[in-house]
Image 1 (cartoon, rainbow, N blue to C red):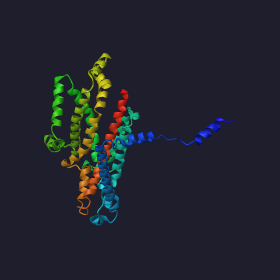
Image 2 (cartoon, rainbow, N blue to C red):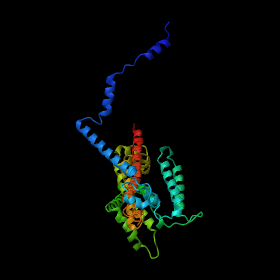
Image 3 (cartoon, rainbow, N blue to C red):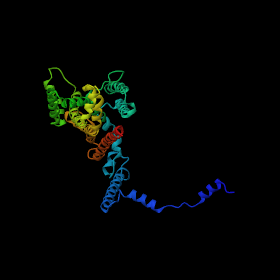
Image 4 (cartoon, one colour):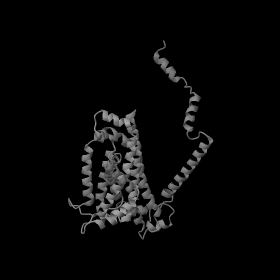
Length: 370
């Protein structure tokens, strides 16, 4: 008597017939984006060839022909990357002229700072507790870098340099420039003529000149207008200039988001009995900021890279420390490419990270309309 178990075993032993049509359709769907038309096929092959040449050249320079020991003399005759240069100059390129024995303080401060940024990027942590976290991080960062308390030696701002300085200038400038930019955007959209004119003049004047001019004015011209005996720290002047410049550009990005909001949203907020500030806070601004995410991220990336301009007023930013490391008599003309490659990789990593996070935010915000 045949049982269900026997039938199942017999079915398992039967040869499986594959439909060749299914495999052909799957292969076609896989290769169609790459091949498609003959022109697309040629473009794909050319791109693959260029990628292969690039990867082959990079691997040869970094690994096959690289100099891994022997110091500057070995790198003079070498044909590849000079790894001893990174061993000798990496800490200087990152921390600059900050006291060598105190590098751990800056490293710890930047770890706390970047950790707080990472936590702030996770949506489930978006609450009022973040303000408490950031208050602690700001105080801890200032104490660690500046010193003068808790047994830490004091380090003047003239010795703040390298990658931490670029982080602080861009992060603080954008963090404080964002609320100012939102206020300016609302002022420019205001129905009150005086407020609107003041906002327009401020934004257009700041956006009409390059950042390097504002930095020069803040560093050179501003002290001339200060009372006798009153001085303002050079780093603080540069930071204020960056905040003002960032606010003007952020204001235009936010204003574009405000203009993209349909008039019906304002009318709906009024119908609910919300006054102007309530409608802006709960209805209009959240939607406007969502629309403004791409330009705001572009501004953030640009300002992180524009911190290299502070070298014009005597501040030693990350790119300046990289260039200064190349002036060492022992390495002049030997490791030029290595320094710029390191700087490019650092800027690429952080810029790509900001772009990737903006795309994540766009996908997440879009879910609210499904």
